[in-house]
Every structure is written in C-alpha cells, then in structure tokens.
Length: 265
Image (cartoon, rainbow, N blue to C red):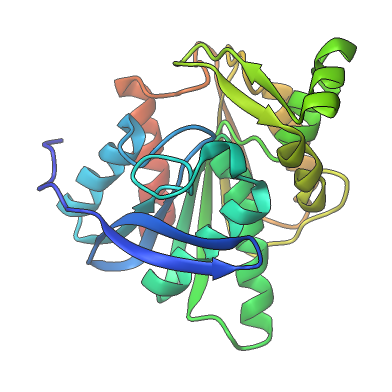
C-alpha cells in the first residue's frame, strides 16, 4: 500500500474541568463507517499503525481521524499533567467535532482503554439522543484497560509505590525511548475509569488482536477483557509470535483485514 498524501494537522480547543488544551488532529474526509484512531500511552498519531490506517483510508475513500492526547506529539500540554480522564475528554471532543454516523474506534494499548470508555460514552449519548456519531465496531490492539491499576500500581514494588506517594512521581525507563514520569495523579485519577470489574455492553462487534509475546500487556489481560463483554460479538485473535507493538507487515495486514471486516461486513 502506497503512502497517502500527507495531511497537515488542524487543532481544536478542549475546555473542560481538567483545563483548556489545544489538541492536534489529522482528519481525512470519506465515506462511512468512519475510522477513529486512539493511540497509546506516550505514543503519537504519526506511528506505523496510524500511518498505515491513513493510507488504507485514503485508498478506500474512508473517513479517518487521528489525534494526539495533550502532552503527546503535536498537542499542547505537559505529559506529566495528563490523566485518563483528561485524555478521555479530549477523545470525546475530537469525536464530537469530526465524526457523524457510524464509526469504528481503533485503539492501541492505552488507546484500547480509551476506545472502550469512549464507546460507552457514545452509547449513553445515543440512548438520550444527543450523539451525532454511532458505533459500528471496535478494533482493539493489545488493549490495556485499567493499566494504571492492574499493570502499574499492583505490579510496582513497595519502594516504587513509596516514591510515588512521597514525591508525586516516579521516573520509568521505557524500552521505547527516554524515561518518563508515572505520577500519583495518573494512578489515583485512573481509578475513576476502571472497567474490568463489571460487565460492559457496547452493542457492537469487537475485535481484539493480542500478541502472545507482549511483555507490556500480557495476553491474559486481553482474555480477562473478553469476560466483561458477555453479550457483544467479540473475537479475540492471539498472535503467537506477536509483541506489544504489532507493527510488523503481517501485523498491519491483519489489522487492516479486521477493519475491512467491520467496515464492509
């Protein structure tokens, strides 16, 4: 698939209880169902998967929007000030500004959590007649719902927890770049958005792609997610040799085939 013509970023101002933020996004017009990319923690909208989806959208005349959370990529803000709630507000603001009619939410890692939260909010808005957008499906790639609690706080040593509680942050050395702070605020605010302890009904098909060799989000986490989606059309695909990123050519092909299934099925 050839690269799509580069689109310049546009910006929206999000003013909420978490403060005002200027959020960068790239929007491609086209037919529906539209595609919405929700990126991962410390990722931006110019990654391999997001770019591959842009090329796919361009070649299939499919509407597509991607964006950067505050403190990420081209958006304003400091990463250390970010929370799950603030990033969810930004996600919903982009969907409200850019999306009309059926949408496929495609979330990677933390973006999988964002997609589930956004889908729940959209379903509630549909129920009360206030939503312009509706759900055509979810594609979740190594989804990490509740990661601040399940994959961070519960796994941190007592020493790391103590540093966070005393100083407000702990510096995490990622395998993907420079160290970044895990803040007390991120952990504590994240508890307002936990999903894995109660059933969730979204009323749309959900496809989960998970690498078995994922060192960041274990495949068992994706399996646990399927248990809170008892009444939806859910398919979990385990990629035996796949890692967390799932960005190899064969992984990208699998993601695009899954999007096609929901868009054209």
